[in-house]
Image (cartoon, rainbow, N blue to C red; front, side, top):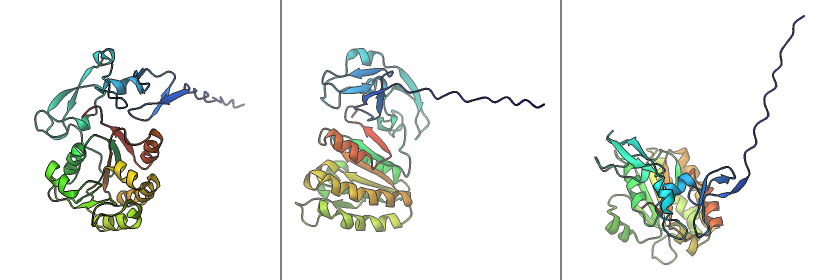
Amino acid sequence: TVVRKIISPAPPSEASPVVGHCTHCLKEIHESDRTYRCTCGALFHFTCASGLMRCPNCRKPIAAGVLSERKQVSLRCESCGELQTVFEGTDPRALTCANCGGRLRHLDVGKRYLIVANNPAIAITWMRDLVKGGKPALIMTHAAPERLRLEFGVKKAPIVQISDRASGAIAPKDLDPAGLRAILPFAREGKGGAILYDGLDEVIAEGSLADVIRFLRKANDMAFVHGVTVIARVTPGRLADADLKRLNGEFDEFLDLSAQL
């Protein structure tokens, strides 16, 4: 007689209940997670809060007790290989190497990023890093192209303005198809590169969230197929939480840098 031992898999352990979403990373917060709540009511994962200096919701300083628990960790710069000491929880992609002046970590090529930042400086820096070696770049922005070139040193990258008010610009409601036509030759080069959508909150204010999302669904798919990295920036506090979450659904990663930069 052959006796077979049958082992039944243990039932999966149930995750603790979800009590909210982190204001910084937008991911779920579970009842068992260690959290920090600002006096304005904004809720964070404790590790997310420890990497910030100010609450991105109300701009008040993060409580000293949280910051005092921050640990320092060592990271090797991806640009020069030099070892750097940084605070745990701080995004190394937003930190400058003290040795070479580059970013400690680079963005992943071909991904689609939505960032919250007060100005386009960090996004333009990332874009320059992604297009080294002659790869193409394209900026689509609500701002005047001359202003971007003057204030942030954009020289070679073509700039397409999205606005109802500027002569020669693409109106927000016409992003599909006019905006897609602007991207198509760039994507078809097949060289990768980067596209920056700057000031999407302003574009949404002039048009609508539906206009922008309809455009992004097609444009981001086009970029993915051709290996183009996408960076989109919104200004802190300009979009309602629900609208920001809907917009975030069109991207691979969300980075709130408003309290770090």
